[in-house]
Amino acid sequence: MAATNLLCQTTTIHPTKSLKIPLNRFPIKPILPFELKLTSRLASLSVKAVLSTAEPQTQKIWHCFTKSEDGYLYCEGNKVQDVMDTVEKRPFYLYSKPQITRNVEAYKEALEGLNSIIGYAIKANNNLKILEHLRKLGCGAVLVSGNELKLALHAGFDPTRCVFNGNGKILEDLVLAAQEGVFVNIDSEFDLENIVAAARIAGKKVNVLLRINPDVDPQVHPYVATGNKNSKFGIRNEKLQWFLDAVKAHPQELKLVGAHCHLGSTITKVDIFRDAAVLMVNYIDEIRAQGFEIDYLNIGGGLGIDYYHTGAVLPTPRDLIDTVRELVLSRNLNLIIEPGRSLIANTCCLVNRVTGVKTNGTKNFVVIDGSMAELIRPSLYGAYQHIELVSPSSPDAEISTFDVVGPVCESADFLGKDRELPTPTSGAGLVVHDAGAYCMSMASTYNLKMRPPEYWVEEDGSVSQIRLGETFDDHLRFFEGL
Ligand SMILES: Cc1ncc(COP(=O)(O)O)c(C=O)c1O
Ligand SMILES: N[C@@H](CCCC[NH3+])C(=O)O
Image (cartoon, rainbow, N blue to C red; front, side):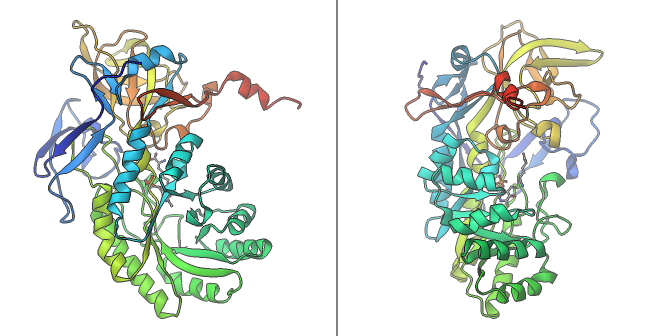
């Protein structure tokens, strides 16, 4: 595939600039000041970028997908149209492997001078090739199921750099975690009992962290908020003493090594992490005062990304780490972080083909072959993901406002609402950006839309398949021999 000089593009963003953001471009709509009734779809809102004191004066943002002046979309020097012409004719995910590396390097550089573990949250994307690459780059892993743990082991992750999270961990999975020496987060009274039982079965003492729910509002969609007091995750501080006593009562089974919190996902203000970290180090002081020698602060994941493609100033991994650095150093702690989205989301597009264009009453639709089955975030959270065509349209293509929808038999089956696009022709390529996190890993086979294949652009610019697409025969296999 043709390599061009369009490798990666860097944009320098100035934090004081005012941004014009169309109101229909907020990813998760039911939140805060943006729940306004629009009289015009094209109405826009002036938003002054709000900066925390921890944020730098300029930031570098990498884009691995770039548009050339003549209107073609490229991924690391590959024309996406050329990739489409080469691979199977069905929706597919296209990743940039170098971008994954760059994202990890950004975290590693930010963490210099700290003892730390980058625990990649496997739930964001569980492609085995991607996991192996992240492991080679030095990441640990964060797991929420026994199968994620098995996959992490399969991908070669060092289990002593893995953390097992979750509010409903089952005994069998905890036994495996205990055998392998994985850190386990205690989430509830029954969870603690199960971890004790697992330690006995495995004949191993388990390194545990207390998942404390600090009741800090992450200012995100309620479905992805986890650190406020009514959340199903973690323990409340009023119960802290009960858990400390329970750990003390099981010296053969449990070693308390740290405290964990995870506030939620898509967080775009580092002050939120700072507020939580202040509370967490205070808990750590209290816990240490009772004679526990705990060494780890785990601040979870949650850093958001620029889904809107507005060039907005968003906190980088460095901003996140800098905001907690002094707190971590002052208590001589090891820092664990659990990024998912900020490591993988911007490395990938879902590439689709336009099936046709239709108009119903006042609404225009672009119907594509991809759908909520391949990428559910817009349907589930009303999330915004940027959409564009991969090739230039003809000069006479009328620009209109479209809902971009799939073929699935649900009115919730949309990838984007009210998007301004040149009217595409049937067969045109259309991408949904920032599809690396919580897209393929949340894909389903609803309406028997089989899960799509995945490809990545390698460091040398070549394109390789990194997952086969599911087929109809795969579905039939579930019934063989029954
Ligand atoms: C406990 C825990 N850690 C890490 C993550 C990863 O979050 P994100 O992908 O937003 O970085 C999640 C998901 O929200 C989580 O629940
Ligand atoms: N699935 C969510 C993130 C959930 C994070 C897991 N606690 C999303 O797509 O944004």
